[in-house]
Image (tube, rainbow, N blue to C red):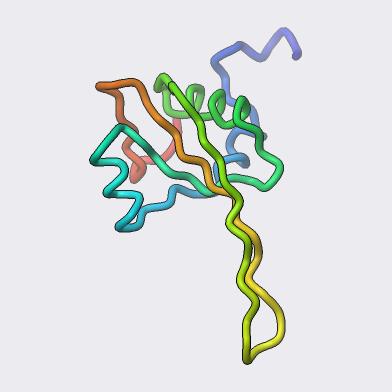
Length: 105
């Protein structure tokens, strides 16, 4: 790491790592029951990278990161298939939240 980059400055990889937040009925229900957020992430993203990116970009404390890869479905009538999607479920410390409509710092 170069001396000009501090430990709190987000890198370009961190901005690319979190593709988009997933806001559905199911993820909203999970977020209300606990302090969980759901993001679509890059397929090669690791749990430590996701944790560090959220902490630097949004300034929150992450307790746990769970990941899953949702396999793409084959289309029956049209040629081709949907692509695979990697999702990250992130547990935040109690009392902390992220305003997903505002974006990263």
